[in-house]
Length: 297
Image (tube, rainbow, N blue to C red; front, side, top):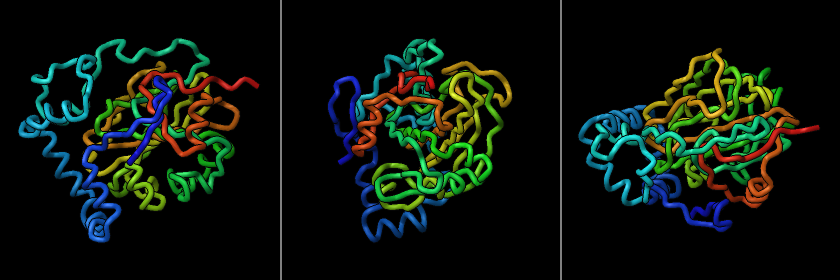
């Protein structure tokens, strides 16, 4: 059972996991682990399923998915009947103002919907993936020179579930760099898998870039693919000015993860998020929600 902290109700709630039995079998049983290594982590497996989710035949799954996971469609731009495929529904846009964004330059917002965990004063060689399992930033981005800039800084992990809004955005205004792509596998990013696969984030397909932000220094942003994620689509234009909250891109079907790294002394994360992270709980957040403030020395 996965419990997450709801910042609004100030209580813990059980996460409804899409494909929970399959994920548990795949990453916790001996036979399932063999399946994960031989088939599920392979690009072809996710590519085939992703292609199916692009077809009109997949659209029949939309209504049941919405009902089973109680997805609020009142904030979606399209009606259910207007989606041409499951992926069309999955990467749905929201109506304006569905996710309010603070104009305060001192406020750091969540770049997307999901479940957030934060680690401060990070050791570049022992960044926490999940309790007991760590990785190095150099392994993650394959660039030691860039990695060194974030020693002692802050790491924010935003895990998206298949039920979440799957577009990701800029956490601050600034100028983004080009995207660097790293090939990899397609393990699930569910906590069940994170507990089973050492250095999972460094194993999976991922893309990274740097936002030279106006208020929080150089923010290193990494998008991590996962099982059945057909693609990571970047929709921004490199080296062109962006505003806080502007769209950066989106994930096609599957649970996925965005990881942000901040240099030391650039951001103060909200106390409730830090407290829950220290106690092993993710906090449920929405795109645009305040998660921290600018560090004032």
